[in-house]
Image (cartoon, rainbow, N blue to C red; front, side, top):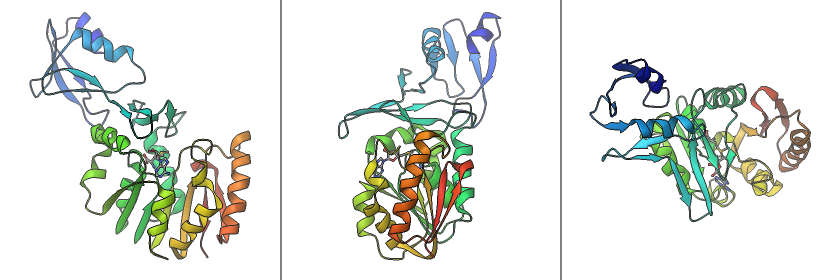
Length: 271
Ligand SMILES: C[S@@+](CC[C@H](N)C(=O)[O-])C[C@H]1O[C@@H](n2cnc3c(N)ncnc32)[C@H](O)[C@@H]1O
């Protein structure tokens, strides 16, 4: 879009510099683009950004361009921010962490939240990612504990304008570690709601295990609810995973389990 404007000799253009949250006016000069804060980017850098459909970029203080991508030494994989038509998603080792087909990660998050109902009191979010579910929960909950295995993911989230509230809201408490272990040290019956939005079953099987569900049941108050993201419930793999999840949730003590296909998940009730 900037390249087209430059070719037609426009001298200014209105663009988003924060991944779609707002718009700003930039100057188009012979050498490149000048941003409202005085930072500059060459036309060669603009071409780099335009050619990359799956990368988001940041400009350092010295005007150098870098891709928002980090290598996780701890988990031996790359994490990066990927643009969509709406809020960006997170790529971990090439796997996309939100729904993006016919929906954007923001609406994906809203559906998860609508499925579980009003979020009040203490909320547990087992998988922070870009913090979208934690941020949405924190709008109405008293306190949200959100757990992320990989600190590199949070470094990526720090670049994301859509994740800002994760680091700013006083009622969001971040914990770093494996949810499987972290949940074991949480008090009995502490939470009114749990949002469980793990990576796919094939990537994080222990977060779909009966032992883990027993722990989730233990930390839920009577009358509490769990939203469990699974994936497309009607797909061949999704329906197989769902059958196993429903059985293990029932064995763990959950009494009523409702399918929420629009949110690609299930809601399970503690009583
Ligand atoms: C699907 S994403 C979560 C998206 C998030 N709810 C959001 O709104 O952006 C899954 C996240 O869980 C993290 N994760 C994977 N295994 C985990 C574990 N055992 N404990 C905690 N987090 C884990 C991944 O690093 C990834 O960031």
